[in-house]
Amino acid sequence: MDEYFSKRISYRRMTVCDIPAVVRMRVQQLKDEGAQADFELKPYLTEFYERNLETGLYISWLAVCGEEIVAASGMSFTEKPPYYKNPTGKIGILSSMYTVEKHRRRGIARVLLKKVIDEARNYGCGVVHVTASDMGVLLYKDFGFRKNKNFMQYELN
Image 1 (spheres, rainbow, N blue to C red):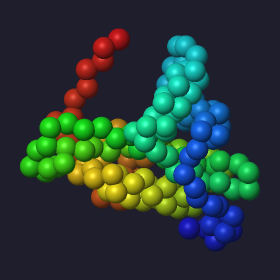
Image 2 (cartoon, rainbow, N blue to C red; image 1 turned 90 degrees about the horizontal axis):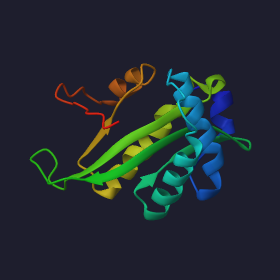
Image 3 (cartoon, rainbow, N blue to C red; image 1 turned 30 degrees about the horizontal axis):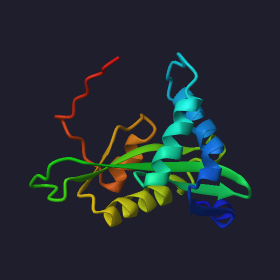
Image 4 (cartoon, helix red, strand yellow; image 1 turned 180 degrees about the horizontal axis):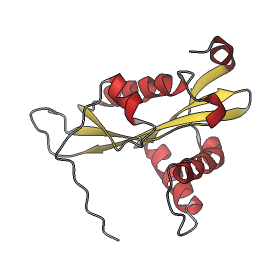
């Protein structure tokens, strides 16, 4: 990790006060990943964060440099019937890992990833799932994530 940035970066949990900044960051992340902006996503994101931060079904750790949020992570919690590799049935769904471009490749995402993984462990999750962007694959593989060749998705739209 670059010492200059590591001394200037602090980490904290997301609060409702952070929602507008995190919404802007999430929209930028989706654009960076090539998503097509077919409609105004901000109200949906705002409602999601407000509802799920309050219930504890979503947590986020943020990296802050001065007053600016420069990176974010997110973990949603869900549950399904227990199975042999996950006797609690509790699952963490990792999402919204994003670092502002000028702060990338400094180890910030790794710190955030560890923090949300620890949160999932404390919640009682047996596994964490992620759908990785091209930028995130190396981070997740290096951290110990493995591909699940059976993962499938059906779009309802």
